[in-house]
Image 1 (tube, rainbow, N blue to C red):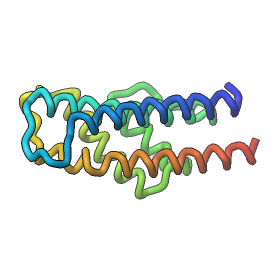
Image 2: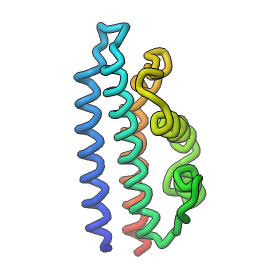
Image 3: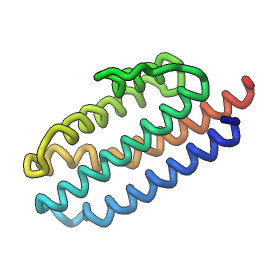
Image 4: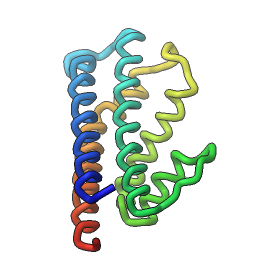
Length: 149
């Protein structure tokens, strides 16, 4: 993979994440205070999709810099930890992403009827900011990579 291909891949993932955020805004409306199970399931799916996009970017960058993440039950956690250790993301972003990683685990192993707005709301409210920080950090890292190559 070339530097250009990596950048194009990341940009495509960012576009996908932005599309998911736009869909989330159609489900979660500022004037609403309660949601149906179906609406909560949709919101949870969109949060999960955004986190998957983040992981996709990190996996691709790790492969590009020849940083192996071994297949294991903890590979999701290992991925963001290795990204922190390698300087791809900073500690603040690592802490934010860890919250979404915990949600990812909950989402994959739970039923939609167990979702509660009180628990989803902080994730929904913070998602756009976390995604914005992630995109900025990744773009900065890709610029650093370009100068090292």
